[in-house]
Length: 489
Image (cartoon, rainbow, N blue to C red; front, side, top):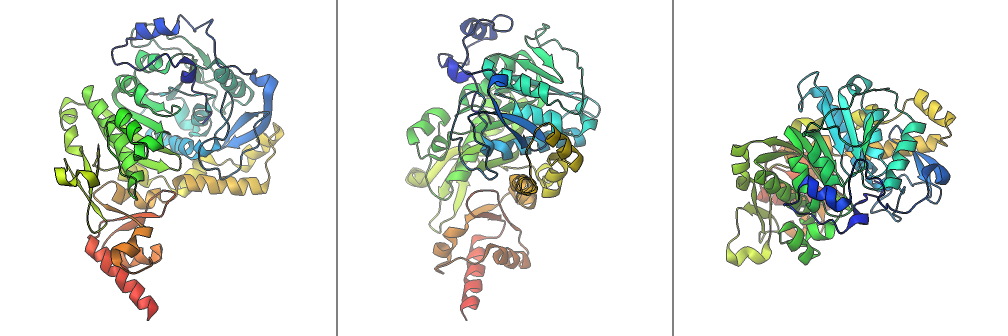
């Protein structure tokens, strides 16, 4: 993402559940389009345009002082500020395109033929919303009403200028709609994108959205209440958190303050981080008489990204504690989930966290490498048109881009079934200690052996070699021992 959410320019605006929209307007000095506000410093886009880049099918103009991105970036952006692109977030944006396209294609969020209102509440320079508009199939675009919001004036100028210079194929003229208070929202329509300049919490609460993306700089904690309140009765919420030190527990004090959780830094820390964030979203939703159903939840390098269905249901909200618990480490190296650990087990427990399913098998199962290339990789005709606009793009660039798109969904479809039901998570590097073998078997061979015994097994997306299975632990150990014993004979 562009690391310009704008909220950093207004650190005096602390999240408070007691703040009303009018309070926020007053504290922001907000009237109309927020004229007269002092935004992040930075030159106008046209004066500082550099390399032309392509993410998915979408052209992105970089700042002149940003190097052309590498095709396999990892970790947080090395530079930040107005107009800087973080290419390491491209896989998350790609999955967002796929999920939104899937919702429109299969009508699991709104009724067939009905409009879907989507908001990127902290859009920065708008790469995500432009990709929604450019890459979701044309037949769904008329139903898709996209709003983009940020507080940073420079970032929004980059969005407007880039979107104007490289317009989407679908030319739309959606009429403005009243907000939930029967007023026209502040902002303007720009070729199929309604662009607003507000504190995110104002935009989240002014209208009811079926789709909200929340991608802040750092922790999303300050925005969750407003995000939940701004959703329609049935909706979809995507949340990014880059404060992984807090979520994993490596920064224990931050984890306690922000997430009310206790962590253990071990092989399960990544999974804990995902579940701690889901737990906070679930309990926040419950306070507003809503419940969640996770669709896709990932630890992706330097950030956690979770995507959940949210629906209004007092009964569902009342049952939230049934999906909350703690992970207790066992003597054999595995774990079990409990509602609350016994006092003598607290030292080897992490939580509270979400202990229910992490994915939706049907939706995640459609996120294949074939689908991502079909949706997000440009045709030769489109590439020719992009090159005519000034894009320098070689065959090697295309090959690398395809690899990155495949990487964004790698292992998801194969693991979808197991991740949507009860399973045990293993780190391959832990197997030698568990089995007393000194080394681990090859992952693919282990999967074949487990499957031959009637069990499911699949690798999960992570920078580390994790896999999940529904096999009992003693069988995983015995199969590992047998495989390595036979390989040495």
